[in-house]
Image (cartoon, rainbow, N blue to C red):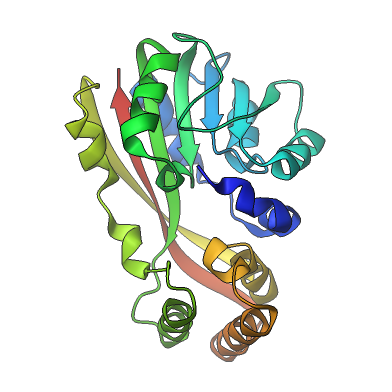
Amino acid sequence: MTRQLFDHVADAYDAYRPSYPPQLFDALESALGQPLLRADVLDVGAGTGIAARALAGRGSYVVAVDPGPKVLAVLRSRSTSRVRTVVGDGNALPLREGRFDLVTYGQSWHWTDPARSLPEAHRVLHERGVLACFWNLLQADGEDWWDRFATTCESLAPGYDRGQRDIDWGAAIEASGLWRWVRQVEIPWTREVPVDDFVADYSSHSYVADLSEADRASVLGDLRDDLRAVYADGTARLPYVTRTWVARK
């Protein structure tokens, strides 16, 4: 798990990445068969705590694990006593077995090795606990501004492929044979965000953050100009889906 690469963009990550729609937490409660109030939750790859804070806001007690000390420092500065941080790796969780009602991976499952992280998630869940992996995914394919941005990123960042959004992560969860059932949930929503904030959000995405300073400035500058041409009032209205896989132990 290599999410410590977000340490150097921790402030932008925390300030500009979107949170999750309320329906996601309703879906987690449905999978659990109980409210999140007083649930024991492990949030893996927690970053600066966008998901962890939302879970704590529902009354959960959250242990937030991430390999990045700086992102966890931001999390601690923003969180209540309901959230405790642990530096650790999602492929080898430094936590005892059978402890948690729910293990979540918000925007982080793809940074793990499922052959290692699935048994680890299973180990730390109590009997009939729930695993949840979820992502906020922009649905802008076919829009000129997005196609230009994504094509440029694919040419400059060899590890980036916009098609990775459509990987069926649930297949690996099912194939592991560790879970009673696996379900996919999709939650569509609309994000209204100032253009400059959206551009700052993308400055914290790994494939942009890893570019050279000149390439990063050029890519983000073009994105800003293209969006301002589309959204003359300076506010982008963008379709998203929160794609979620939940699995019961």
